[in-house]
Length: 120
Image 1: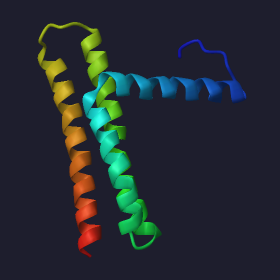
Image 2: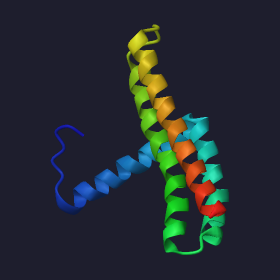
Image 3: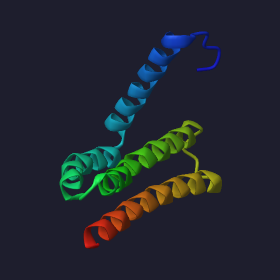
């Protein structure tokens, strides 16, 4: 946060607390994030089991983890846009649509990675 004077370990502890608050807020307010976490809970064990080596497991799990990461960023964009008002504005719509497109691309990437790893 602006003006924060914490240094060293205290800064790291504060950063961790802010990150956990962000996870909590996204979980509480974003159904898509909850759905993606459920998919992670189901697919991470499958990825660990289906990957034949460390590289395949890393690809399977990494592609999955990218989806909620992009969802967090998309939710942050939406929150900032919504903060400025309810009126319809082309730039607000564009920002939200671009964030949504990023989430879609991350899901497609995960699907392609899983398909290529499992079909090889």
